Image (cartoon, rainbow, N blue to C red):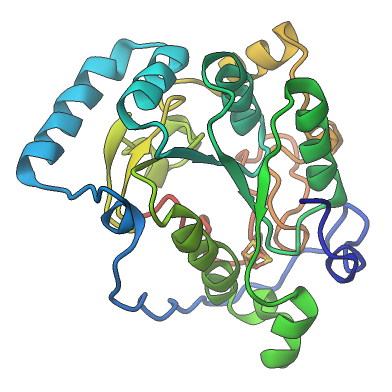
Length: 277
Ligand code: SF4
């Protein structure tokens, strides 16, 4: 799979997106009731009481484990139905680096909304060169042009929850179908929502076991690993973007601002919905 459609890439602007006006955000419609995630796997994995207890105990045991040990557990317990989603952030890059040593065959995917920065997509190529890992691009069923035409313009301007739901969450639901577990690169100290993340837990939204090997890591630890091992990272981080998402919803931050302050700036929204209950 190559770079995104030319039609998607053509809409990428320069790195500086203007701040958006403050708007209320509406919640997306609930997902249709259907078998998804691990319930659609062969064999299916169901969140029975006994299994949830196992996850809870395992999570407690792994609290003091290294991210590498947590990934080894995930691979031993859930591969080949273990996957990872990445937006190529610094945390995701450290997990890719670790997985390249532990289990390079792990399927890794990126939710390619059509609104990603060119720098982010180029990082996918650098991952391929450095590690031989081909991160799969999972796309919505409409191009940006089709989606905006359907909705009378860019949905991110008026209803970013809807836009994230259509262009990220739906795609993750599809990508996760048949898997048992997924790894996320969230850190507990990134936000209040993320502070409650278990190392290992049942993700009811996606019907998967969710593993967060970096839950106990700090930003400093992530960047130390990146510099110590010369791990490739998004050049936008050196231009004032501590957190990089889609270009319409990401701005550079000022000194002293929270590391995620540049995401959905001007909206109440703080998360795309992948990591909230
Ligand atoms: S981050 Fe912005 S552009 Fe990307 S899917 Fe969400 S609302 Fe749409």
